[in-house]
Each structure stands twice: as C-alpha cells, then as structure tokens.
Amino acid sequence: MVDILRGRHTAEPPEGTVTLLIGTRINTLWKVHRWLPFFTSMVRMLKELLTDKERHGFLGYHVWFGRTTLVVQYWRSMDDLLAYSRAQPMEHVPTWRLFNRTSEGELGVFHEAYTVTRRGHHVIYRDMPAAFGLGGATSMVPARSHPGTSPAEWSDKDRADAEHWGEVRASAS
Image (cartoon, rainbow, N blue to C red; front, top):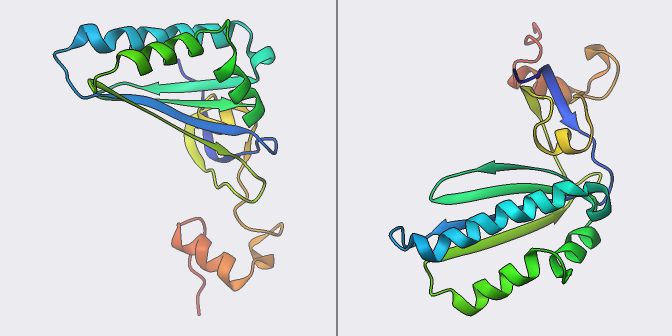
C-alpha cells in the first residue's frame, strides 16, 4: 500500500538540485526493432544509477509510459548530471552514440534540465504519496503558503489568496 501524506506539503530541495525531464516519442509504431533497443537501454541506465545513487548524485525518478514516454529524474546538481551523461564506462555514452548513428526518425528523444533555486520553484502536493516528486526525492515539509503564524497576521493579498483556494472562509465585511 502506498503511504499517502495527508494535507498540503511542499518540497524543500537543496539549492542547485536539478529536475530532468527526459523522454521519447515513438514516431513509427510498426518499427519496433528500431526503437525498442533504446527503451531497454533507459531501463539499464536507471538500474545503473540506482546501484550507486550517492556516487552519481542521482536522487530518484518517476516514469510515465505511452507513445510519448516521460522520465522525470532528480539530481543533486547539474555537474552530477553532466558527469554521468559524459562518463565513458557508463550506459549513456554508447547508447547516445548508437542513437545518433542509426536513428532515421522512428524515435524522437528529448531532455530538459532545470536547476532549482530557493526562489525559483513552486511545489504543492495535497494528499499525495510521500515518495512523490521533487519533495519525495529531497525533502517534503508541511506547506505554509502564507506568512505569519495565524490568519490575523496575513496581508490582504495573503487572505485573498487563501480565500480563493478555499483554505479559509471569506471574511465577513
């Protein structure tokens, strides 16, 4: 059974944590022999990373399958991500070289990497598994979306936001 973390929570990742979106899109479904080897290589890469997460700076991942498959990965830093991507004895370099030599468009690939900064992210989870997302890969804490210790200390904007999202009842005027 999945451990559901009740209520509102947010992630508190260390400065410099990286979120990587990496995936594929099958452009020619019937050419299984052309794209399947790259799907299996992603499985090998994830197993490789999981065997020594600390050494690689790999924090975790989630996968969504479909014609477009998405893997969301979390890394300790951009330096760790790039070091793994360029490491010769690891699975990534030979797989990427093979793809570049043999691809004829039957499989599209993409990646986007983002460095998390203290003021450059917004993360909210409500009644989600404890091990989900950036919070699950780093640190998840109860969300306090409004400054102050009580609603009486909120600014008019904070109160309006809380009322908008149903976090508090509208004040009587």
